[in-house]
Structures are given as C-alpha cells and as structure tokens.
Image (cartoon, rainbow, N blue to C red):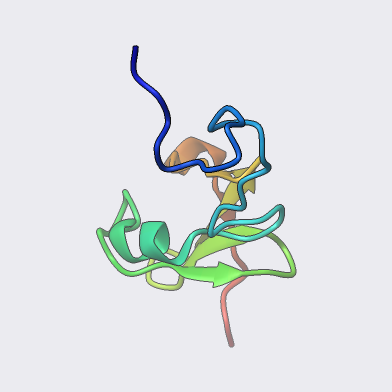
Length: 83
C-alpha cells in the first residue's frame, strides 16, 4: 500500500490550507503576463481599485469575477476617452 512519504505527520495531503499566489481581489501575476486583450491582442494592466483588467488601446475594462477574468468584449466596460 502506498504511503504519503512527503507528509511526516501522516495527515492527508489536502488537510492543511494551501495559499495560492492569488488572493481574493487580486490576479495571479503569471496569468496576467499571459493574457492579452481579445480585441486588440495588446497588453493588459490590472486595476486593483476596480478589480478589472484594462486595455488602454481598446479603451476597455474587463471585469474579474471570483478571481476569474471575463475576457469577453461584450462583458467589458467602455472607458471614457482621455481629452
């Protein structure tokens, strides 16, 4: 029978809380590096105040819901034009 040799306490591997790189209200930096705007294919910036990914080129803000970026143009908020 196989034993969990990496866990000296003998507790099941999933019994301790595990912290991920992303916490509530933030985005995993590695994931952000991989994502691009689906409209312009340009870089995105994370806005922690609005919890959105911003495409400055498209003037769109993509929402993040429950830690998941919603990368649909139809769900994005149009940003006001800079004068």
